[in-house]
Image (cartoon, rainbow, N blue to C red; front, side, top):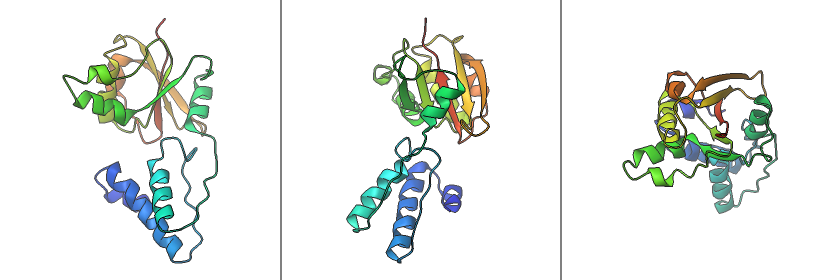
Amino acid sequence: ACDDIYERAASFDEVYPAIAQRVTALANADAKVVYAVPGHPRFAERSVILLQDLAAEQGIPITVLDAVSFVDVAASAVDSDPIDGGLQIVDAQYLAAVVDKEPFGAGSLGVDPARPLLVAQLYSQEMAAAVKLALGRVYPEEHPVTLVRAAGEGETTRSVSLALLDREQPDHLTSLWVAPLA
């Protein structure tokens, strides 16, 4: 378990390397280790990439097993075919970083409003506020967005206008589905 790392770290930039170090230390101690993540280990799981790199440096063999991703279950939750519409996927942290680059960040948003968009890791109200500001550059305030919580595991969906996104209380299991503009 790595809950203690999440609880004491100030940011995800501290969490992910600490997890990789813990898992490799256990493996070096001749323990059989399983590091499981929710969903697919190659979708929005930076800790897995860091773990693979560190394990390779230390000569630790590693096997990554596929699983259902948040993309699959989010698309099902909103009853959409992600391939048909040309789904775009972006991390909320990326959108927040674009907002931080103001006044010159708007050109680097890289979102096509004519295609559906899935925003991963919308884990806090502060992140929702930053995403609202970023997406407000390409979508009107009244554009509907759908919060998808705990997709695939008793998920809930809630549609709100983009203008109200920062009033929601997302958590670590929340993604945002943004339908394309007509």
